[in-house]
Length: 220
Image (cartoon, rainbow, N blue to C red; front, top):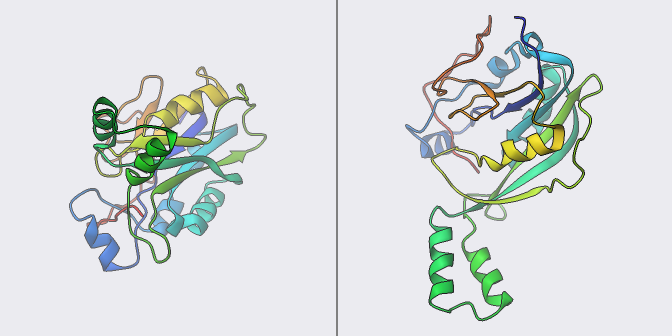
């Protein structure tokens, strides 16, 4: 494979070890086991000096670190981005509250914003965020913009769909001229190559592709 990418964005289809979590997302999208993910030959596409941005939930923090290492990368921070998930209709309800003049001050707005954050499961607090780690291979990539912020507020899309703002911030952080690809992509993005079982088109083909399972997972 001739094409080498300096920037890789991945959203691995993590597989839960309990039927409740897997079953909660039934018929949304396929998953694969951890071993199969580690066997994905990222060395075929990663440039000698490159960066890997990877989505993960709190349940899979350790697996995310191990997977980046299996792919030949070293984690630099677990918190490149944190997505604060808002309910799908949050924007509509906030706009309505403004129109009806129910937001009298900043405290009203902050209370409404907190109310509109997503309520997922959790053994302690109810989770409503998802994170992106950054890992490097070789010397990584030089930062091109020092003003890129960590926290992203964005409404939920379709199940497992991530906010496109992450792509834009990565382009600002590392430049929009670096060869880049999204793995396990679900939709095309201008300037990005894509690969995944739900991607409309795949730019590349791996010699050793992952094997997807018939069960499913839900985000925490």
